[in-house]
Length: 409
Image 1 (cartoon, rainbow, N blue to C red):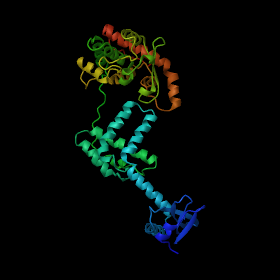
Image 2: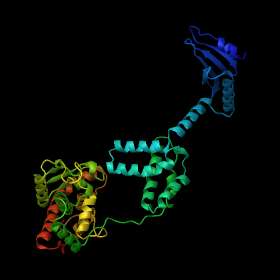
Image 3: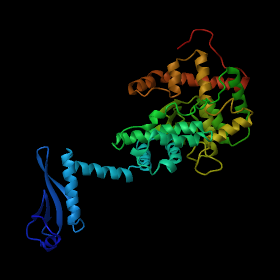
Image 4: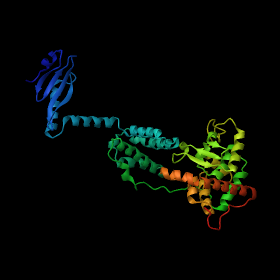
């Protein structure tokens, strides 16, 4: 017999839970603590199940009966009411919690735990921040390709084609992370390939001919402006040709001047693995002279303007401009291309040894170990030869030598 509101209000708790039926599977369960819970019994796929409908009086009799009718309708359509309710809760959660901003923040946090460099993380944050005003509060599942393209077009309209390209890539990373964590089913940025203006590629300018590089070396050793750290850094860029950030942020603890070895920690390496470089005598001499100037400093190339910070890459490039070299001729990063080209042109060293010295070895662990052991001795000889060639340019004005005979490696 159907229940009434008066009956329900008059139900008193007992020592054990008991039920009062309203018909059609709907019943009210009265607990010993006094709570009254609406439940609905039903069968689905041959199994007996219970559906939680609400608590009385928050959920009144009329509302409980409406929800019973809704559940019956789902059952007639072959849908389990419990599964439907969980799906609806997940959908509502996705609308409020699984937003682009929240998932992007999770991706950045994962990158920090994965050990990505601070520079890489800062770039990702910067690009994501550009998208947040338009996409930040939007549920990740409701963002489509057209909406993303509209955001990218705003950046393109300012002439920032490379930034727009990076935005598409980074937004795609957010979506792929959402897919991997079961909060999205597709990456809409995939369909935007080819939709953006392709930026013109500008490689890092470098002097890769022997005469041009010799002129650069002479200018560096004759340069008498700037701080001792700047002058030493430029000389070591020429001798050791690391990436600028690897050298600028170097600390004295990384150098074993007695053994002639520089161990660059993985945190500063592009490929996120430690790299060991041989130090020729000329580099060791420059480092010892620099160490004597500021023996108390932890940083090798400490900034004269910002305490506790290294010199900036702009400092090195500015020095090159003061020497008369334009940005189209050379940059601090260009020393790597100069060394790579001229070492290969010399015909004296195996290409694999040159690649190993440049830290261009592939990710395969066995191959990396093989390169370290097989080419270390050749890299030491190559470092000594390269530094001696630079020293000869400085002292005699001679040019880099190039083998006219068969290579000796």
